[in-house]
Length: 101
Image (cartoon, rainbow, N blue to C red; front, side, top):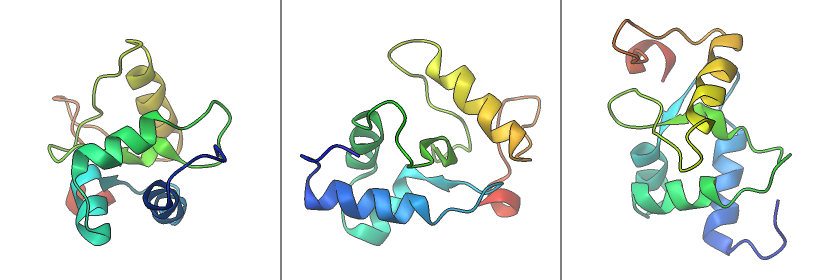
């Protein structure tokens, strides 16, 4: 984790670390718990350095989908990591938030 991470980002990372393998949370639900916006949670996830111990892949959007990434391939990696943890996607690329949330 970056040493310069803001206290809010630190809170976000602490909460994301508590998501167990095979489960997901949405950007919005994390934001709601911490009193910030879903966008802020997204910025915090994007700010993680490579090799971070924060399981960023477990944070998805409110539609139950993996959000596109700037690099164009991070979303493929995210889906692969989630599938490896046992998270299932339907034909439309959505995760059942009732089951895995």
